[in-house]
Every structure is written in structure tokens, then in C-alpha cells.
Length: 126
Image (tube, rainbow, N blue to C red):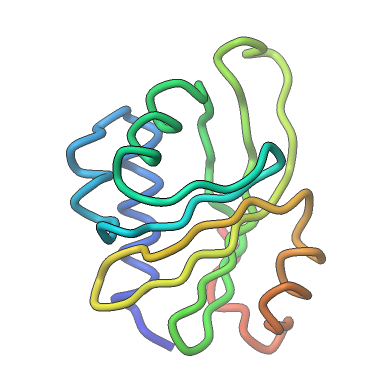
């Protein structure tokens, strides 16, 4: 387990949720891959566009980590529907304290299956 990887992912969430786009970009690699239900894109410009326009807040819950892969169960809310929330999960790859990829999954089980992580990799149950 690497506390550095966890700290990077938590800082990434903080930057996204506070709309601190500059910090979000600093925490991400130049060629970051961003994927979700509407497809995938790559690069800091794509991350900036998504973070600026998605209107999403992701509150981290359970966290799993193994060899640079971090899966986070999240409570998501959207600015367009502030009274509605959903539980989903995202998988992050962290290299040298930068997020190199993040893919949103519909639920924790799907994210764990996609990354080959399991309950044995649980590090935090916020």
C-alpha cells in the first residue's frame, strides 16, 4: 500500500470538488486518460473541459489500492440535480504522484472487477 497514491487521489477529489482546476491539472499527467459513461478522452485539455463542465461532486468512501491502482467508491451529485445522488466508483492509476488515468464505473463491484482488485485491497472505509 502506498499512502502517496491514496493522498494523490484524495487531493484530486478535493481539487475537483472545489473546482480548483489548476491543482487538478497539477495532480494529473499530461496524457491523462479520462473515461466514463459518455466515453473516454485524453490529455489535460480534455480533463479541464470535463472538470469545468460536468458539474459533478465526488465524495470518496471506501478505498482500495494495489500497485498504483486505486479504486474509490464515491457518492456523486451533479449541479443540475443537486437533490439527487448516486453511489458509483472510479478506478485511478497513479504514477509518481500523478493521476495517469481515471475511469468511472457504475458501481464498486464493476470497478474492482475491471482492475482485478478485491476486498483484500481495502485500505479505507470512510
